[in-house]
Image (cartoon, rainbow, N blue to C red):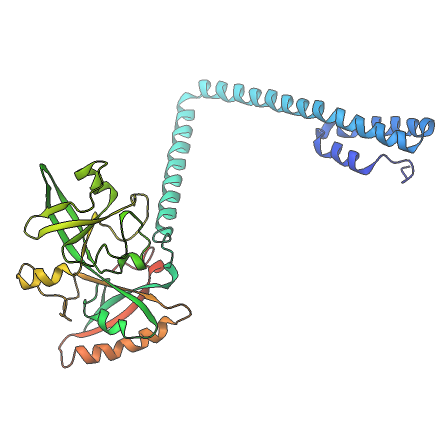
Length: 346
């Protein structure tokens, strides 16, 4: 029987148990233990322990190699048997292989789609403090919700102490854009001057603090800039948007093609451009139009440690103030940026 005085050292024995192949493990341990006891009686404890440790380290590589060799032989045998079965049952094997391939492809596609949806807008630094105001119209007992909201709502939100920055966006910017002999159809948004303070779209060229301040300023994505200017720095160049005006390029974003966002744009024009366009009657007035719910978005950055519930509780007061005695009934609600995608269809 084993006892602590005649047992081999614990650590070498433990290493052998881990690395040795399970079939040969116990026969090897038994042989080494028997030899260890012989050395123990002939040469003493210190010599025997050093000898056992050396034998353990010498045995481990050969045992690992044998285990790998044995696994390789078994794998080759399994492959041979599988190929024989495929040759023998060609149609059945084809159906199984195609079914497995299609199933794996669909599974990977769904996993990729889900990961894309759930990673949407997560790259923004302040993602947990960004909210979008959605508008509601009540028709009898049915509530219709829109992702859009009127632009003048931003003025009311900016007066609330819980709100740090408000950003307005307007759809339908774009058209035929021309630079020298190059012309492309572009699509984008009108954006407030603080757009880059709230959202983490980084600029490769230009200053994010001033890029959208002046009227007829425009920021291009890197992809669109490359179409018009190649590798040239386009800052200060003039891009003509037909039927709208001449825009000075004030910024170029870094590559945003791999960023998953619910916002899709090729360029951003300064929202101050709307003042001139409205005065020229080129677009419908929207800066002060409380009933234009369809073309605009309103986002805000919540102050740290502030509660969005306080803002949402004040929204009914804004409705009463700006929609008195109307046949349609209006309402507003908040939607967190991280709840837009995935989220309800608006």
